[in-house]
Amino acid sequence: RACVIGISNDLKFTDFLDPRVRSRLGQLDVLFKPYDAEQLQDILRQRALEGLNEGVIGPGVIELCAALAAQEHGDARCALDLLRISAERAEKQGEHSVNQNHVRGAQSQIEADQMTPVISTLPSQQKLVLAAVLLNEQNGLKNVQTGQVYDIYRQACKHIRQNPLTQRRISGLISNLDMLGLVTARTISKGRYGRSKEINSCIPGNIDAPEIMKAAEEEMALVFRAAYHHQTSL
Image (cartoon, rainbow, N blue to C red; front, top):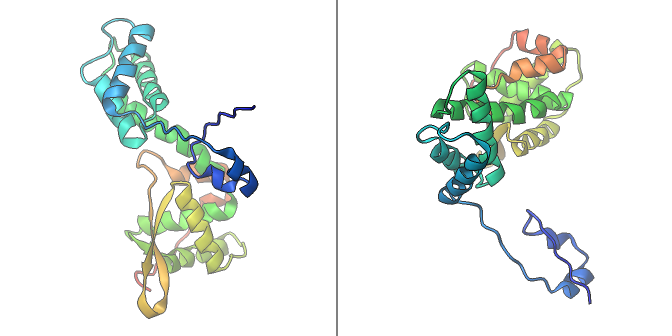
């Protein structure tokens, strides 16, 4: 008799198994809930005792690291990374203790470290679509619709002499950017005119997405330098 123990972040992973396998599996599910803030504090305090000198953790640092990690996903590894990077920042700055400002700085650093490679390695067409969203926002437009993004995208393609994709294809690329966490794309009904998306960038303010894209592809410098005619409504 064989026993199989599997661990997955996807609660529906068995849906992808062959029906014959599912019928014989007879699995017993054990769910591990995310850590809450108090549990994360206990973990952080224990690790701090083991890895840091006594007295170097300032008031509220453990609590802030735990709260930030609990709000996002309750992941102990992320909370530990936050504390570790906070301590490293304090050391680099010549400080004798870690304070809450170091934690805030560490949070920004982690966000940048995670998002920068995602932006820089986007395919060219997705970079152009993201640029179109950012260019609309730089012009003061929020909750831009798919047509407005597509209009700026077409102009950007013209500036760099590239053939544009269809609006339907661009709508799919917007959904991809949404899944990557670079934009939010909320589907709205326009009555008899069908449906569209309201699109906003969700890139943190401490991350300079245009500079990242320009460093990755020379053509993006021209895209962000060019002049555009913006549609305020469709």
